[in-house]
Length: 482
Image (cartoon, rainbow, N blue to C red; front, side, top):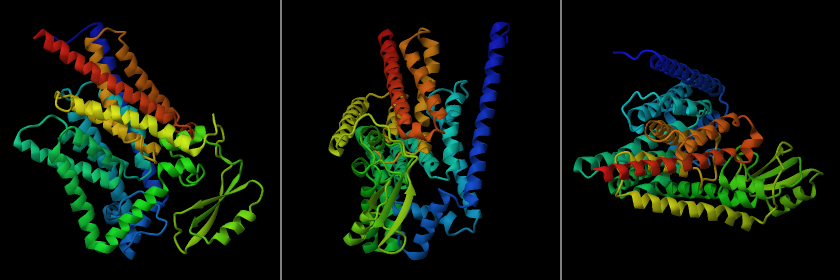
């Protein structure tokens, strides 16, 4: 018999709430698509920069000087050619946006079909999707590569995650490693997942990552650039990565303000809290390698309220160039003014400690994981990608979708099997509330400047660890009763 009375009313209210939530998800994502089309057709950032620099490689046979794709391997330019160089404007950008829509939809489908760890169609699934919808929309709006990376990471971790011993599973793990390798070639940060594969003893998956590097990076580069220029291109990429690295962020607080004022990496946020900025309203930037006498002339000619910054990134043309930027908007609040070396150690020490704990945790659980364990550990590693990176944009938060799935599912399961006021359920609630606060702060440049989203990610990571502990406790309880 169908439920009746209060139970039926509760069920109807729940169904109505889910419908409203799904409608909200669709509206938010459609808004992101509209913004993507508007920005892409007008060739505004980020698509204008990505398309120009990838097309430059196609037309000139080398990476553009002073490229805005400073953090990308040359392979990324190749991946963008179908949209930037081979299709007419604006067809290329519209097809690119379509691939981002497909990546967002594919990530949601993977979460619904496999990552949730329960039969499909559970009532809780819409809530993590709603929580991450704004971040997906931001990634769509930015015309970035974040959603490609999310889909590849989720699919790759799914293939390599569950404990597999059959020979047929080796090919599945090989394919998963290839997908993770592709993600690392598009955005370098997923390369950290190679450590996860090593600790989980996924040798075939590691082989897949190496194969992806050879087939999709080395081979195309050699075919297009030649051996000598391939080496030069990768050496230039390493040099650019060093110029934008954590050490330079800490040592020169104003160096990347103009280009990356919304960067919320750990190194950048610590520097904002612990290092003083010059009391200046205007920044004079010299790009490239100007002669020493030119630097001295600029330094002597600085007006009151101006500060000189030397940026080693070369300009588009010539050996050096000048740019003057208004920095009156830059927040100056800090709690201390410490030397760069002290701030570097304050950055390195907790980061290294946390990663040692994660390494031990992953190794210890590597041979003991039940079928659901992989999702929790994989979600932790996807969150770990944020912390050592010198660049953390607000649209990268879409990569936290697996962690939100884990936490919302753990909250739903706890409601069925544990007391109403358990500590774990409060932790899951705190993580979701923290995420909502983070969403509310996305529009505030100052709050993002001081790293509120790093705090949100830390709370979310703690909630995932609590979910893993709860899962283990249930397995131990079940084993003791058998």
